[in-house]
Image (cartoon, rainbow, N blue to C red):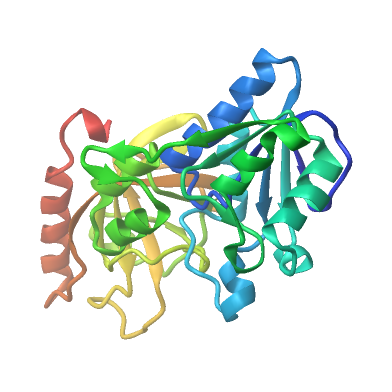
Length: 303
C-alpha cells in the first residue's frame, strides 16, 4: 500500500471515504467493499482520510484515538488497499460538500466507485452526505455504495461506542466491535526493575499519549514477541504500592518467558480487565495478588 499525504491524479479509483479511527468492523465493511469493487473491475482502491481528526481543527483538541496513526495504516493495509491518502484537513475545510466531491474526489481520482458508511458526512458544515453522493453518481460516472450500520450482538458498532467500552474497562465488548484485540505496540524500555524483586519480571512499554486511556487496572493479555504469542498479565496505572508518582506506566509480566528483550518491539493485546489497580500494604501482599491474578488466565482465549 502506498501512503500519500498530498493529492495526486490517479484515475478510475474505487474510493472508501471516512476517518476510520479504530478501523473497526463497520469501517472494515466499507473498505472491503471498495477493495472488492476494484478487484472485480480490474482497477485500484484508495482510502481517502485525514492525518488528524477534524475535531483537532474545529475545537483545538484532538480526541483520544483507538489506534495510533501507524496502527491505522497497518489495519488499512491488511485489507488490501492500494493507496492511502492522509490529507491535511485544514487545507480543504472550507469546501462545501459539492465542492469537495467535484474539485477533490472527481477532479483528482475520476472515481469508478465511492463507498461510505450509512451516516457519512463531509464538507463545510456537513453539507455533503450520502444523499449528495447518491444524487451525483450518474452525473460524475461513479457507482455509489452505502454500507449499512454493523452490529456486534445488539450493539451498533461505532468508534464512540468502542471508546465508551474501553473507558469502562469492557475490553471484551470493545474487541468484538473492533474485530481484533485492542493493543499497544512498542519497544520495551527499562523500568525500576522492582518486579524481579518479587519474582515477577515485567516488560515495560510507553503508553501512547494519543490513545484512549484505559481504566487503571490489571488486564489479561496476549503478548507477541517476534513470531511467538505468550500469555501475559498487564498493569496499567501509577503503581501505588511501590510509588507515589502520578506518572502512568504499562507493565506486563510474560508467563513462561525469561529472555532479555530490552529495546525489542512487542505487542500487548488486551483481552479482559481482571480488577482495578489498588495499593497493597506490602510487596508480599502484592505478590500474592499477582499470583491470584495469573490463576485467572485460563481458557482458549488466553492462549
